Length: 109
Image (tube, rainbow, N blue to C red; front, side, top):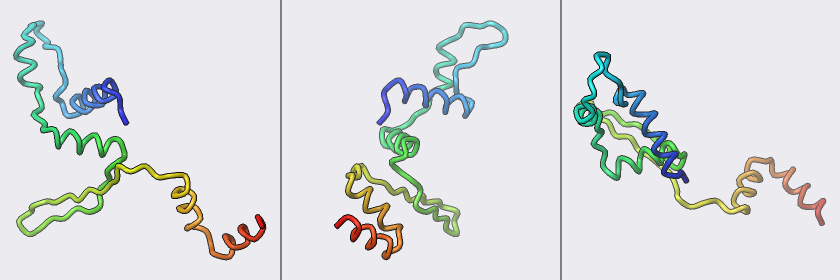
C-alpha cells in the first residue's frame, strides 16, 4: 500500500498541520531534547492502522453517531480483499440497463 518513506512523509505533514512539527526557536537555542518531548504523539498501533487505512482509501466512514451525552461513534467500513477483473466488470455491467446488456451479449454470439 504505502512505503515506509511515504508513511513518514504523511506523518510529518500531518504533524506539521497540527502544529506538532519540529520548529526552530527564534532565540537560537538548540534544546533538541525539549523539542522532541513537546512534539511527541502517543499513537497506539491500532490508531496508526486506522489513520493509514483512511489515508490509503481502504477504509471510509459509514456513519457518525452522536447521542444525548455527546458521545461520538464513527463507524468505518472497508475491505482488504482486492476485486478481481470479473468483479470490476460486473460492477460496470450492474450500472447498465438490462436491455443494453442483453443486446451486447446477443451481438457477441
